[in-house]
Amino acid sequence: MPNHFKQWLNQARQTGLVWLWLAVSIILIDQLTKFWAVSSLEPYQPIVIFPIFNLTLAFNHGAAFSFLGDEDGWQRWLFILLALGVSMMLVLWLAKTPKSQRVLVVGLTLILAGAIGNVIDRIYLNYVIDFIDFHWGGWHYPTFNVADIAITLGALSLVWDAWKNKDQH
Picture (cartoon, rainbow, N blue to C red):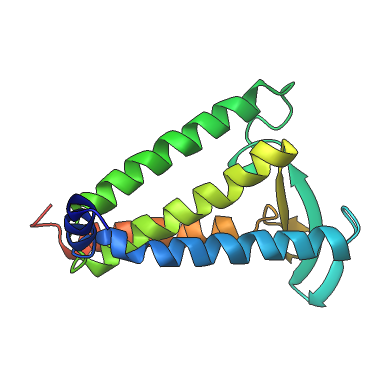
């Protein structure tokens, strides 16, 4: 192994990059659950699990809450470019953040995993597979997936870290 690569690897172990294993794990779980949903569920036919929770296979051509989902396809490329750009920025941020800032690093890693999980769908399928469906009475929260959960938890982690360390930021 070249000496400069060993040096880079040792430096990376001291940064948030050490948590990339978590991103890879979440991406795999996301893709496996989406594969399961497509092979086990009928599109838009809910399966009741609990009175407020269904499994419902849906295809999202837009972004969060189907934003721009009704457009004619240009939005796919916008969302792919945005996700790839954000992912590169997150990796750079992780590379500059000490691993000791655990809440921040885990939050960034979760957002990275979610962005990549959904961009994989957009690249190969032209849409994102969703299947988790919460509802109450006649109201339904937009259907989502494991990648969306990771993004949400990551964003909450960033807010928590910023609030907890407001004097340092």
